[in-house]
Amino acid sequence: MVLLKERNRVLIEGHEVDITHPDKMYYPKKKITKLSYIQYLIDVSAYLLPFLKDRVLTAIRYPRGVEGESFYQKSCPEYAPDFIKTYLHEDIEYIVVSDLATLVWLGNQGALDLHIPFNSINSSYPSEIVFDLDPPRREDFILAVEAAIILKDILDRLEIPSFIKTSGNKGLQVYIPLPEATYTYEDTRKFTEFIANYLVKIEPKWFTIERIKKNRGNRLYVDYLQHAAGKTLIAPYSARGNEEASVATPLFWHEVTRSLKPSAFTIDNLPERIRRMGCPFADFFNTKTSQSFDRVLEGLILSSQTSKTP
Image 1 (cartoon, rainbow, N blue to C red):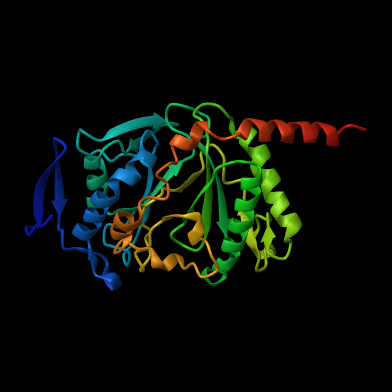
Image 2 (image 1 turned 30 degrees about the vertical axis):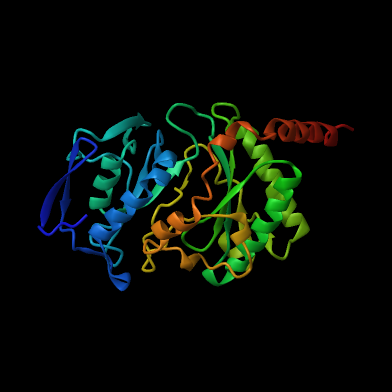
């Protein structure tokens, strides 16, 4: 897509979308313009849109690029075109990204970080469990790798399929797909809390569930409380508002090694990576009904009841 004027109107799936100042630098150090970012969104839309579908959106906008001021946006602005779909939740008229035209419009608005909740607008139950493995600094990324490797082993032994992505910043996020409208957040909290405590028990020098940052030391924070109603997480394939133009990138598990560098996955190279390797989350939605989370949850409940027995 090549646009030369300051204001261009393009037709996307029957909707007219304005693209203004396409040569504006969103990522100056990487020389990525607004148009380049919009092209990235188009290139990955087949893989990004399924995760945005039927979810309310919280975006971080950088109208002057990553070197300018940014702000969170939840409410759909009044000037949004008529084709933008919205959903009213707790007095906020959220945007729901249901098509490519909406995604391109958001790109033109400088929406880089795309955050979504764990449940869709059709259910109050979570659609997946996500473990957010958050090291104290980028330099401590190896802690996220170690935690992910241990977590993968635990989930494999429980026969629970899992997927992993970078956060696009300094951590890793492990996903467990769930059948829709089946488990409550209270149900999943039993599991996430158990796993988090188990990680801390086996490697207390590496991992912690301490919420106060100053008390964590150099340990990785296993944030099981983040998986809750109203909380959000960066969407797979969303860009991040940092100078490296990094992306929250789905990985194949065999890539999660001690040599893994999250800075290697950027807007520049993600489309080619997908063309070459495919999408590691390709089977994510098909896996929702083929895991044994029922059995695991029943075991946790039984164990809890047994431990309380005098």
